Length: 213
Length: 213
DNA sequence: TAGATTGTTAATCGATTAACAATC
DNA sequence: TAGATTGTTAATCGATTAACAATC
Image (cartoon, rainbow over all chains, first blue to last red; front, side, top):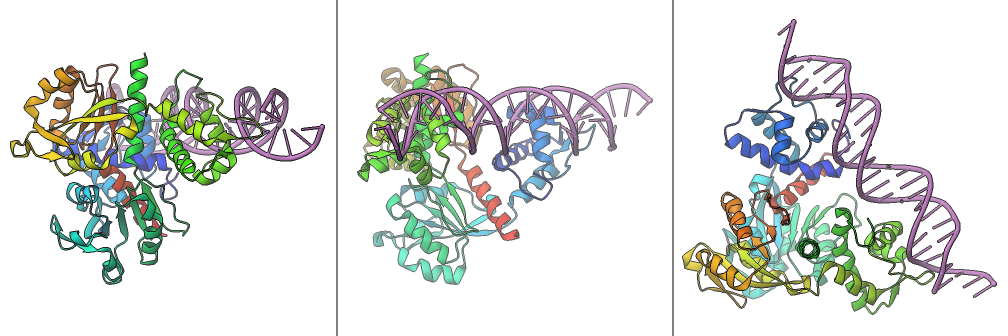
C-alpha cells in the first residue's frame, strides 16, 4: 500500500465499482457524500472506503466528506479512463461480436481498432463500424497500428499459441475469454482471465445449496 | 469450513477451476496426481489444494495422491453439474444471444429453456434451437415451466424492476450482466453480478501501470 | 466554537502457508 | 518396511473493521 507504490489487488478490483457508483451519484446531481452514506449504498463499510481511497491520496475533507464530481474524476484518472489503449479482438464468433458491440471501450480508456477471425467467410463483414480481417493480417496490422491490448475470443486449443505470437507483435495485455487459463512467462505482460463458465458454475453451486436448506 | 457446513466463498470460487483442470488431466489420460504436481500446474500452493479439498472430505490417499477421475467426479457433484436447473435469458441483444450460443449450460448443471426480449421485431427469431419470446409472455412461461435461474442481459434502468418481478414468478437465482449491482432483499435469492466493464477497467489500470515503470 | 467526518493507527478477523504426525 | 503424500493443526500473513485524534 502507499500513495504511489503497490496497491493490493483487492483494492484495485474495487475501484471500478467506486467509479460506477460515483458516476451514478453525479448523474443524480448529488454534490457531496460521506463515507458512511456511500457505504450504505454500496453495502460495504465506511472504514473500507476511507482505507481504500487513502491508498491514492486524501480526496476527502474532514467534516464535509467527499466531493462527488472530483472524486469521480480522480478515480477515473487513477484507472486511466482518460487514456486511449488501442485494442484488437481475436475471434469474431458470437462472443467476439457481442463484446465488440456491447462493451464501451472508450469509456474504459481503450479504443477498438481491429477484429480478426480465421474463418475467411467472415472477412469483410463489419461489426459496428469495424471490418473483420483475416487472422493472416494480424502481423501486418500490428506493425502498422501497434495495438497494446488483445481480447481473446478463441477456442482454448489455440489460445496459448496465439497469445505468444501476439506478445512478439507488441501486445502487452490480454483480456482472455477462452476456456483456458492463460499465463505468459514474459515479464511486463498483463492477463485478465474471464471464465464466464466458472461464474455460472458458482451460481449453480449456490442455487443447489439453497435448495438443500 | 467443515465437511458439510458453510464453505467460504474463497474456496467456492476456486472449485470450478479445479474442476476444469481435473477434466483436462482426465482427457490427457492422467490417472493420479499429487497436490504438489497439481499445484505446479495451477500455480497455487499444495497446502491450499489439500486445505480446499478437505472442506468437502478426504478425497486423497496418503502416499498416492488423488485419483483424477474420481476427484473430478466428486467436485462435479459438489458443484451440481449433474443437476438440471432450468434457465431463461432476459434480453436477446448481442450479449444475450452470444451467451445463449456460447455458454454450455448443460455441462454446468443448467438447461436453457427460454429467451425473452421486449423488442417485438425479435419475437419468433431463433437463437440456437430456442425461439425468442416477447417479454409479455414471461409470466405465463414461468407459471408453466418454473425456471429457477434468470440471465439478465438488459439495460441497467430496468434491471431491478424485472428482477423483482421474476422473484415473484419463482426465479431464485440471477446471473446479472446488466451494468447495475443487483441485490435482492428477499432471503433465499442468489445473485452473481458479472460486470465485464469492471473487468476491462482493471486491465486498463494494470496496463497503464505497466507503462509507468 | 461545536459538529461532522476524515485520515490513520491499532485490533480483529479470515485466509493462506508451513509443518508434521498419520497412514497408505 | 521405507517412501510418499495426505489430512490436519499451528503459524503467518494480509485484509477488513474499529477507534480516535486531527481538522475542516
